[in-house]
Length: 215
Image (tube, rainbow, N blue to C red):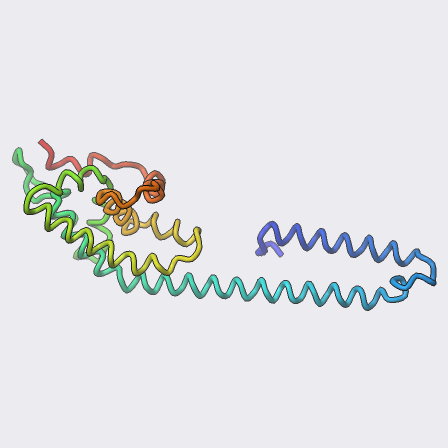
Protein backbone atom coordinates (compact mmCIF):
# COMPACT_ATOMS: atom_id res chain seq x y z
CA UNK A 1 0.00 0.00 0.00
CA UNK A 2 2.82 2.41 0.85
CA UNK A 3 4.37 1.80 -2.57
CA UNK A 4 1.31 3.31 -4.29
CA UNK A 5 1.32 7.04 -5.11
CA UNK A 6 -0.51 9.26 -2.61
CA UNK A 7 -3.33 9.99 -5.09
CA UNK A 8 -4.00 6.30 -5.54
CA UNK A 9 -3.96 5.65 -1.78
CA UNK A 10 -6.39 8.48 -1.12
CA UNK A 11 -8.61 7.29 -3.97
CA UNK A 12 -8.74 3.73 -2.60
CA UNK A 13 -9.57 4.96 0.88
CA UNK A 14 -12.32 7.21 -0.48
CA UNK A 15 -13.84 4.35 -2.52
CA UNK A 16 -13.71 1.99 0.46
CA UNK A 17 -15.37 4.51 2.77
CA UNK A 18 -18.03 5.34 0.18
CA UNK A 19 -18.76 1.64 -0.37
CA UNK A 20 -19.08 0.97 3.37
CA UNK A 21 -21.40 3.93 3.85
CA UNK A 22 -23.52 2.84 0.89
CA UNK A 23 -23.70 -0.77 2.12
CA UNK A 24 -24.68 0.33 5.62
CA UNK A 25 -27.35 2.65 4.22
CA UNK A 26 -28.84 0.05 1.91
CA UNK A 27 -28.70 -2.66 4.59
CA UNK A 28 -30.97 -0.53 6.73
CA UNK A 29 -33.37 0.11 3.84
CA UNK A 30 -36.71 -1.64 3.44
CA UNK A 31 -36.86 -5.10 1.95
CA UNK A 32 -38.65 -3.70 -1.08
CA UNK A 33 -35.55 -1.69 -2.03
CA UNK A 34 -34.11 -3.32 -5.16
CA UNK A 35 -30.54 -2.20 -4.47
CA UNK A 36 -30.78 -3.45 -0.92
CA UNK A 37 -31.56 -6.91 -2.25
CA UNK A 38 -28.64 -6.83 -4.71
CA UNK A 39 -25.80 -5.61 -2.51
CA UNK A 40 -23.70 -8.65 -3.40
CA UNK A 41 -23.91 -7.80 -7.10
CA UNK A 42 -23.07 -4.18 -6.34
CA UNK A 43 -20.04 -5.09 -4.26
CA UNK A 44 -18.92 -7.49 -6.97
CA UNK A 45 -19.10 -4.73 -9.56
CA UNK A 46 -17.09 -2.40 -7.32
CA UNK A 47 -14.48 -5.10 -6.76
CA UNK A 48 -14.23 -5.78 -10.49
CA UNK A 49 -13.76 -2.09 -11.24
CA UNK A 50 -11.08 -1.85 -8.58
CA UNK A 51 -9.32 -4.91 -10.02
CA UNK A 52 -9.35 -3.42 -13.52
CA UNK A 53 -7.94 -0.16 -12.13
CA UNK A 54 -5.09 -2.06 -10.46
CA UNK A 55 -4.37 -3.97 -13.68
CA UNK A 56 -4.21 -0.69 -15.62
CA UNK A 57 -1.95 0.82 -12.96
CA UNK A 58 0.37 -2.20 -12.99
CA UNK A 59 0.56 -2.07 -16.79
CA UNK A 60 1.45 1.61 -16.64
CA UNK A 61 4.20 0.94 -14.09
CA UNK A 62 5.63 -1.85 -16.24
CA UNK A 63 5.62 0.41 -19.31
CA UNK A 64 7.43 3.16 -17.40
CA UNK A 65 10.02 0.67 -16.14
CA UNK A 66 10.56 -0.58 -19.68
CA UNK A 67 11.05 2.99 -20.96
CA UNK A 68 13.45 3.74 -18.11
CA UNK A 69 15.48 0.62 -18.88
CA UNK A 70 15.55 1.46 -22.57
CA UNK A 71 16.82 4.95 -21.73
CA UNK A 72 19.50 3.58 -19.41
CA UNK A 73 20.68 1.12 -22.05
CA UNK A 74 20.89 3.84 -24.70
CA UNK A 75 22.71 6.17 -22.31
CA UNK A 76 25.19 3.45 -21.39
CA UNK A 77 25.89 2.71 -25.04
CA UNK A 78 26.41 6.39 -25.88
CA UNK A 79 28.43 7.26 -22.78
CA UNK A 80 31.77 6.24 -24.32
CA UNK A 81 31.28 8.39 -27.44
CA UNK A 82 29.93 11.31 -25.39
CA UNK A 83 32.85 11.11 -22.98
CA UNK A 84 35.39 11.07 -25.81
CA UNK A 85 33.65 13.98 -27.54
CA UNK A 86 33.51 15.93 -24.28
CA UNK A 87 37.26 15.44 -23.90
CA UNK A 88 37.87 16.85 -27.39
CA UNK A 89 35.57 19.81 -26.73
CA UNK A 90 37.13 20.63 -23.38
CA UNK A 91 40.64 20.61 -24.85
CA UNK A 92 39.69 22.53 -28.02
CA UNK A 93 37.89 25.19 -25.97
CA UNK A 94 40.86 25.28 -23.56
CA UNK A 95 38.63 24.58 -20.60
CA UNK A 96 41.54 22.57 -19.29
CA UNK A 97 45.16 22.90 -20.40
CA UNK A 98 48.47 21.16 -19.98
CA UNK A 99 50.29 24.41 -19.34
CA UNK A 100 48.80 27.77 -18.34
CA UNK A 101 49.40 30.91 -20.40
CA UNK A 102 51.22 32.57 -17.54
CA UNK A 103 53.30 29.47 -16.87
CA UNK A 104 52.64 26.70 -14.45
CA UNK A 105 51.15 23.26 -14.67
CA UNK A 106 47.57 22.93 -15.89
CA UNK A 107 45.07 20.27 -14.85
CA UNK A 108 44.82 18.35 -18.11
CA UNK A 109 46.90 15.49 -16.75
CA UNK A 110 44.63 15.18 -13.72
CA UNK A 111 41.48 14.91 -15.83
CA UNK A 112 43.18 12.60 -18.30
CA UNK A 113 44.11 10.21 -15.50
CA UNK A 114 40.51 10.16 -14.30
CA UNK A 115 39.31 9.57 -17.86
CA UNK A 116 41.80 6.74 -18.42
CA UNK A 117 40.70 5.18 -15.14
CA UNK A 118 37.18 4.84 -16.56
CA UNK A 119 35.46 8.10 -15.64
CA UNK A 120 33.86 9.00 -18.98
CA UNK A 121 32.29 12.10 -17.44
CA UNK A 122 35.60 13.63 -16.32
CA UNK A 123 35.86 16.18 -19.14
CA UNK A 124 32.11 16.70 -19.37
CA UNK A 125 32.26 18.13 -15.85
CA UNK A 126 34.32 21.00 -17.28
CA UNK A 127 31.64 21.97 -19.79
CA UNK A 128 29.46 23.99 -17.43
CA UNK A 129 29.65 27.59 -18.73
CA UNK A 130 28.04 28.54 -22.06
CA UNK A 131 29.96 31.82 -21.99
CA UNK A 132 33.34 30.05 -22.14
CA UNK A 133 32.19 27.93 -25.09
CA UNK A 134 30.92 31.00 -26.95
CA UNK A 135 34.24 32.78 -26.39
CA UNK A 136 36.03 29.78 -27.91
CA UNK A 137 33.97 29.89 -31.14
CA UNK A 138 36.27 32.48 -32.71
CA UNK A 139 38.94 31.57 -35.26
CA UNK A 140 39.79 28.28 -36.94
CA UNK A 141 39.71 26.39 -33.65
CA UNK A 142 36.23 27.81 -33.11
CA UNK A 143 35.00 26.18 -36.32
CA UNK A 144 36.30 22.82 -35.14
CA UNK A 145 34.70 23.40 -31.75
CA UNK A 146 31.29 24.07 -33.30
CA UNK A 147 31.56 20.89 -35.35
CA UNK A 148 32.49 18.92 -32.23
CA UNK A 149 29.64 20.51 -30.25
CA UNK A 150 27.13 19.64 -32.98
CA UNK A 151 28.38 16.05 -33.04
CA UNK A 152 28.01 15.78 -29.26
CA UNK A 153 24.48 17.19 -29.48
CA UNK A 154 23.54 14.75 -32.26
CA UNK A 155 24.69 11.78 -30.18
CA UNK A 156 22.91 12.99 -27.07
CA UNK A 157 19.73 13.80 -29.01
CA UNK A 158 19.46 10.14 -29.98
CA UNK A 159 19.39 9.27 -26.27
CA UNK A 160 17.14 12.16 -25.20
CA UNK A 161 14.57 11.10 -27.83
CA UNK A 162 13.69 8.17 -25.55
CA UNK A 163 12.59 10.43 -22.68
CA UNK A 164 8.81 10.49 -22.83
CA UNK A 165 8.30 11.72 -19.28
CA UNK A 166 9.40 14.88 -17.52
CA UNK A 167 10.85 12.94 -14.59
CA UNK A 168 13.14 10.89 -16.85
CA UNK A 169 14.20 14.01 -18.74
CA UNK A 170 15.05 15.80 -15.50
CA UNK A 171 17.27 12.93 -14.35
CA UNK A 172 19.01 12.70 -17.74
CA UNK A 173 19.83 16.42 -17.95
CA UNK A 174 21.10 16.56 -14.37
CA UNK A 175 23.85 14.02 -15.14
CA UNK A 176 27.29 15.45 -16.10
CA UNK A 177 26.91 14.43 -19.74
CA UNK A 178 23.40 15.89 -19.76
CA UNK A 179 24.56 19.21 -18.27
CA UNK A 180 27.27 19.41 -20.91
CA UNK A 181 24.59 18.89 -23.56
CA UNK A 182 22.54 21.76 -22.11
CA UNK A 183 25.59 24.06 -22.08
CA UNK A 184 26.44 23.30 -25.70
CA UNK A 185 22.85 23.83 -26.86
CA UNK A 186 22.74 27.18 -25.05
CA UNK A 187 26.12 28.21 -26.48
CA UNK A 188 24.80 27.48 -29.97
CA UNK A 189 21.72 29.61 -29.18
CA UNK A 190 19.42 26.62 -29.43
CA UNK A 191 17.52 27.17 -26.18
CA UNK A 192 15.21 30.09 -26.88
CA UNK A 193 12.64 28.92 -24.34
CA UNK A 194 15.24 28.74 -21.55
CA UNK A 195 14.16 25.20 -20.66
CA UNK A 196 17.67 23.74 -20.78
CA UNK A 197 19.12 26.68 -18.86
CA UNK A 198 16.77 25.73 -16.04
CA UNK A 199 18.48 22.37 -15.61
CA UNK A 200 21.86 24.03 -15.10
CA UNK A 201 20.55 25.89 -12.06
CA UNK A 202 20.22 22.55 -10.27
CA UNK A 203 23.98 22.37 -9.75
CA UNK A 204 26.45 24.89 -8.30
CA UNK A 205 28.59 26.88 -10.71
CA UNK A 206 32.24 25.83 -10.19
CA UNK A 207 33.64 28.82 -12.10
CA UNK A 208 37.19 28.45 -10.66
CA UNK A 209 37.54 25.14 -12.53
CA UNK A 210 37.20 26.97 -15.82
CA UNK A 211 39.51 29.92 -15.21
CA UNK A 212 42.93 28.30 -15.15
CA UNK A 213 43.72 29.35 -18.74
CA UNK A 214 42.31 32.87 -18.42
CA UNK A 215 44.77 35.78 -18.28
